[in-house]
Amino acid sequence: MAMRNQLNLLFVLLNVVLLSVCSDGATGENYVSAVGDPGMRRDGLRVAFEAWNFCNEVGQETPHMGSPRAADCFDLTDSSLKHRVTKDDNKLGVGTPFSGLAPANVDNVDLYAVQKELYLGSLCEVQDTPRPWQFWMVMLKNGNFDTRSGLCPANGIKVPPFSSTRFPCFGKGCMNQPILNHQETELFGERLRGGFNGTYDLGSDPSRGINEISFYEVVWEKKVGVGSWVFSHKLKTSKQYPWLMLYLRADATKGYSGGYHYDTRGMFKTLPESPNFKVRLSLDIKKGGGPKSQFYLIDIGSCWKNNGAACDGDVKTDVTRYTEMIINPETPAWCSPTGLVNCPPYHITPQNKKIYRNDTANFPYSAYHYYCAPGNAQHLEQPVSTCDPYSNPQAQEIVQLLPHPIWADYGYPTKKGQGWVGDPRTWELDVGGLSSRLYYYQDPGTISARRIWTSIDVGTEIFVSDKDEIAEWSLSDFDVLLTSSASPKS
Image (cartoon, rainbow, N blue to C red):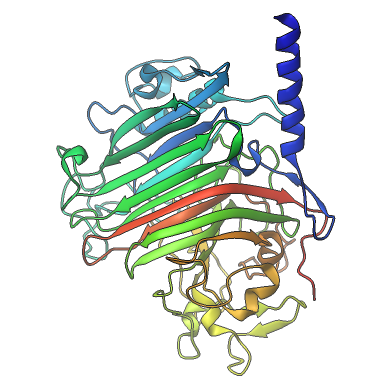
């Protein structure tokens, strides 16, 4: 028996090495995976859940749900699952202490969730080189904002309650956290299956139908020893919850992941840095979510200050940076020759040529849905649109892209409809190369920021839908590949 266990351990270690090093048979180029579970092929899954309110905090727990953090992490040995996270762990909520929780945070709803994520991470952690990792992250966000609540700062600065009709909210309580149901992973013959689902409509029961209520679901399934996990997603808006977001993320294992100003846990054992990484994934979109669905084939997030320095947790000077490729063919280009306010100041070609937005003969306007600058930037080029100051805990900068021939060298979609409903694809995206040539604001005369990315995700943001909408998609084979040079071929 001892010899058998040693052989099993050797087999597992060999597979870890093989999965961590990928090869491109066409070019002979070797890649090293940045994630702990390359290509989502590890039978012993690590997946977690987090829910955010409009400004990426908790605000208030939903009764009987605990703090909105949960995890499903297990090891598979001899056709038996050993779960590392208990139901009691997942139900932990304010007022209940746990290992590692600072006494000062036991009744602080926001900091309790932060500490709970770290605690769940400690239960799920996998030792690896160059550092341990914890889990894939399912992220759910409610876009309702009660401006009279005083909960959300403006560009990181606390502001008093105010009245506005700009944001959706049905009244007091509209920023609530969801009901969370957890189907703990089980083994059915040779197949593993589990999931999370729920609704924001408190008091409703999705098992009786989801007409007229919001709904979210992520189901993961895999054949033991074969291929990738397949994560099947569903997101439905409702009249009371018209703005919802659902993503599957690879996050940093320490420090600040995209949009998060607390210490985090995640999947990256090495953080990717532009230009030297690619992203590989398989995506099958079943339902798009309607015309307001900003479906992100890829969304990358990070944080650096306007002077180029790394973020340090000071929300008054830290800036979240996002870049998103939207593949919904109904999403228009707000950037145009007559809408320069929605365009970045310039575009950089694969040959490193700058094209300024007032060059109407050459600037690729239809390649950009929208650009907005950080609200705390001091030297902005006019005209400019500044990003919403409330939907992140600090200022943010967003670059939203659309399919266009200009992105061909990076493997991104080049025309509307590619990768959309009825066109499932496996993508290899030179995310590092493209993100190294995008415009991001920086104060004049400062040292250029290192573009190190702490979150990469796939999913949709259904943006204030006019009616109930449903998006459905599956994601598999997700990997982030570090390269010696990921620059596009000229």
